[in-house]
Length: 206
Image (cartoon, rainbow, N blue to C red):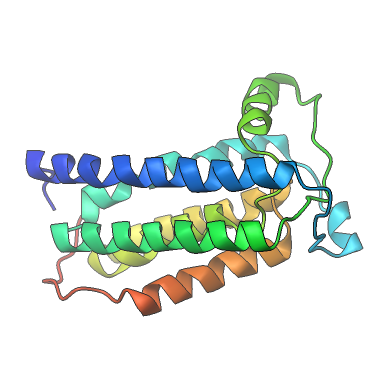
């Protein structure tokens, strides 16, 4: 579908408050949990043997590009639906973060060559406590589910592969454990159930 000035403007109008909400809720919960002495450890010991693949940080941060996909594929009503789901996911996640403060079982890595500046930035912004549910998993899945009915088969394959790599990346850069991924997917389903799709005309983008 064609990208219009109206589409871009609506995207910005929705993205800014969502970003502020995320920064306040996620950052506030992470700061609060960093002050706590007691943290839950939601992982199996065998998960700590999952290999660390620093190159996957590129995939991990590609979620920022994935967030632009609604501009290409969504009608206004779908953008509103997605924004509502993301806001709900952020609020519910924040509640769970505070109720279930966690601690990652993975160490923080300080010798990853060319990728070290990226990891340093990640570690400065994201303390290892807001793990369950994974908002990384939830938000990227919400984007794909909203655009999936409107895209052709080739794009579906491409985007699903991208989504699968994003799932894998949170493990291979040691940012999340398996239960966090499951929690992120469950949260996605809850948000879609609470905020169903609005009725729109079905078209396929090429």
